[in-house]
Length: 469
Image (cartoon, rainbow, N blue to C red; front, side, top):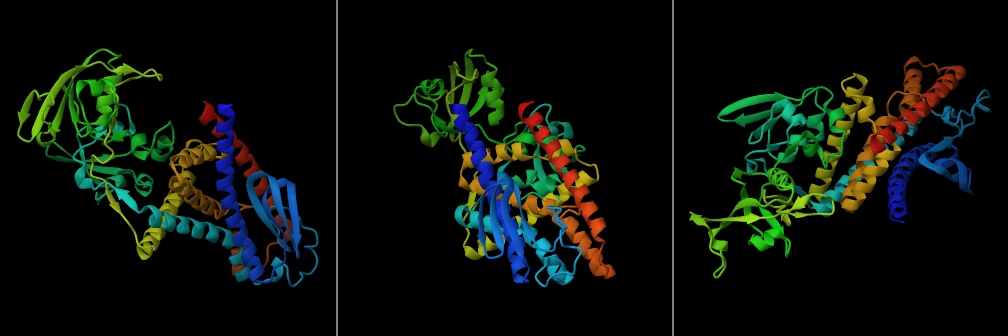
């Protein structure tokens, strides 16, 4: 039963997200066509078979059973419906082909524009509702690097201090894994180590490699973590609680080895297999309460404690102390936005993420990234959308905005049957003052549809292999 509910949740969230995106995209085409007096025969959300329909005026509104897209059928237009009936005769005044090229260009690009506008509005709403949280780069003195990770392969080592990304001085630590930085021609980190400054270059097909595996984010995918060992919570009755640890303590040593990062601590505890570990931790002297067990020693403003602790097994087969990290240990800063600031921040986010997708597409077409690893289809989208929804509505709407931009960038590509393919025909007509022959357009559209269908099948199989493989 639990699996059924979980599966329904995947379906619900992806249908909701895709439904919003498709509706907005097709609404753009529909409104632009109506603006210029074009007759719209059908407005469909979803592909056939049609499960519901409603006729209003000249337009039939449809709901398709296949929720992976939609379409607006404009009279007199050679589109993905491959319906050429009546196109050999003279155009009627309310047909697409009877209108000036510039009007047809607006109609064709309106779907893409609406998707970009939707993304910008969502980013503005997120900025207004949630503000912004970031870690100042100056608060991160060093990083932990996982052995065998991409960052380790680049030459980054635990303790390195990252000072610049792609030549730009680091102001917010999140910029280390910013999408546009990762999609650059060469991803470059400038680090300080032992008084030296080093330039470290990322590997080929970086974006493809980052998309593999089950990382919790781009930093984790790179193999970088920065979470200190300061405790935010100690579970009552846990081994850590029994040993006397309290929130605010920072564990500095395990079995005589210095630990600075949370990942180092968890590695040591998980590797103990339940055997006792000898912990050392520090606590501000001002936090030592009267009557509590005295510290082993005091160094300046720090009280130092030491104790042997036996990690407790968990149902997942790991071993734990019963503690959680302090999410604010790095001094996260929060910024609230007024309406004007939110508009500026949202538009900037929309621009940055659009540029990122353009970079990724360019890298795919030039062979700098692996298509199989970089392109996700319905299954991967469903998985990511469900995970975003589990994190909260802010994360869900962020995912919708990103998908809206991805849909816009993909649709404007000069591929037959996509908006970009139609746009190429219109640009040709505008430049040459000559309309391409109907026979050529029909043939190209049919080839384009076959290519897109084959691509969709390939993507779905690839999704299944990545999800279940």
